[in-house]
Length: 412
Image 1 (cartoon, helix red, strand yellow):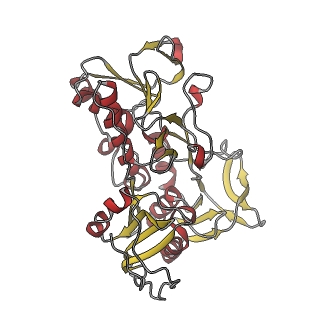
Image 2: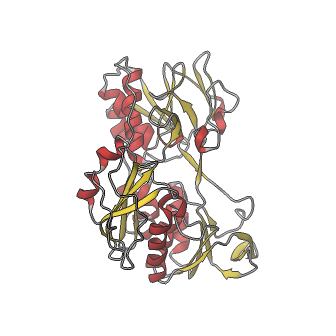
Image 3: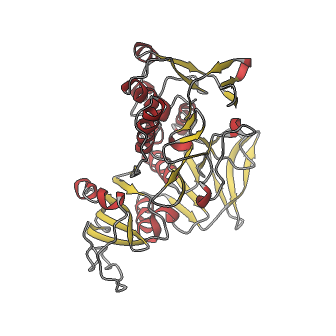
């Protein structure tokens, strides 16, 4: 269930593992499977057309023996008689059900009925936003996470005046920490973006059903022709509530939502989950972990396909990977960085925006984040995968004013 990256990867992996039965991709969107990362970048900027993000056409899927049911939404599942219930009263019987429904954009409790207020999660979201942003002069982005920062960069480069609003004092602080958060803030400010950090949205201003501005929690007002709400996403599991499929809790230690699975992706008999919606048990961390990364979806798919086809089951040592393009700053990361991690710049310079930063949690490598040094970054992947103890001096040593690498070198 789900025709995005994770669902498509699972279909491919099933065929690679020798599955000869029917494979049906059921997707709520009316489109062929497509790639999501370009939505906030190349597609929103108008540099790419929709055909460039299509991952597999309907005809190509049919040639591989995969049926695509697009524009169909799951409304429930009966795990006893192995039946998937779809809208319009249709049922599908299954031998194996793979939940790959991904995420839904998180919305505010008010304002989404106004014209000019957008979220960005689907292709239709992106096309609607692109149509309006092409003529918008003043854009307000609510949320300074990766999506919000990428949207802000894209529309700013198109010539609009842009403001970012976020309750945290730095962009991406809870993921990248204060050092790299400061860097991201400086990059946006350097391109003329107006940063309203440490501030929340109180209400909207509107005229005849269209947004004209926002009111912040300090009473200040920002004019806006267009508002993009980029405050995260939630696992698309509403259709599973009341079924026998176990759902993870909303806290990180509980799996942060999604479908609760074992270390090989199995939720209950004949039901698996992959991709953004799946909270897999992590033996390394001793808890369920849900990861919103493209590479993770592909890894999940390979493990689950092997289990479904009767192959030797195996647990998966995940090394999540993500990237983000903001102006000329191209960030890459392996692992799970957190804003509370200890961060060491071990190569290059933050000031020059060409660096490699190692993230430590409990003295062990939790992630590496870098820009402009892809080969050096990849060399740290084994250390991230094995959560290695880092060899370094523990003396508290501040980053030099010019952002050069710390004087306490680490070794991968």
